[in-house]
Length: 199
Length: 199
Image 1: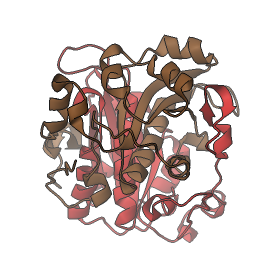
Image 2 (image 1 turned 45 degrees about the horizontal axis):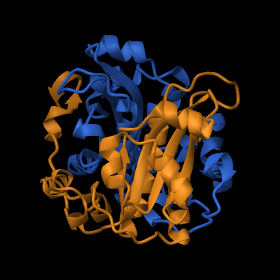
Image 3 (image 1 turned 180 degrees about the vertical axis):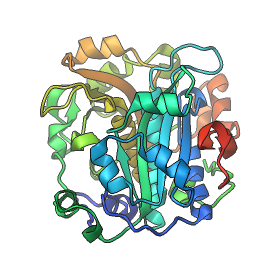
């Protein structure tokens, strides 16, 4: 389903077309394309080039692995995510590898890298729906994540699909219009809350 | 300067060409293009569509505002960032506006939005160099940031420039090759540390 953003200024088509559906096709993603997604992510910037991101990929064709990952989502997300062809657990390292000091921006840099992942996905007609509604402790336990690493999100990834196959109350989310705050509510100048004169 | 990533799998050109220089042209960015950067950012995903991001923009043509922002960087960053045409302070809200509950992924979602900002910038031949080397408390005080918000990074933004105009020890960073970990070091399957079979 097309759900292009209604922008006030022109932006890249690949950013305009991105949105987070709940309905996905059950078509498997070609392994080559999955590699492209992570390759795009790999070249993101990070503080001191730490690259604090790690991922655990679960594809639908490996039923046990997929069930293990699905089980790490809150129930409301399991309802629709059970149908996606791939789940990606996103994990970030809290410290710098070079000196074991805390990395203040480790979660930020994971997000930044996921930005690349989403943009690459859109360019290949794939959709990404990232979830914060996950059981962080269950991920820690099930996958034996080291203490120095933190599970942050799980992303559902796949081709677009028929929303008729998911429950009506979730389906309606996919048909709701996309809304965002206007720029003057969050782009300031000189002091907090003063809208930038550029706008 | 062109410094395209040497990728193992094909990715979008706009992701491949992005890198973080220290040398920028002092050419001012057209206000219309600045609006496009934030417009691209605005359409990023966020948990519960909270859009936890806010920004304070300081452009070089407003000398006092620019000096105020520059003063919030650690000294090592001030050396080169003094020449950029625009600094952007990036701030994230810690709680959900709807219910005042903590937002576990507020810093992640700021990073995700900055991913859009960087991609849009590259498409307009602009460069972005994000810095974690900032004085968070000074930003809090100088700009009177509310307690519920957290300064996270400052981004330098501008056109590419001549690295001869910055000190030699910093200049050499712009000529170093771009390096990243291989995918099999951070894309796992089924358990922590087991490289994904897709790779």
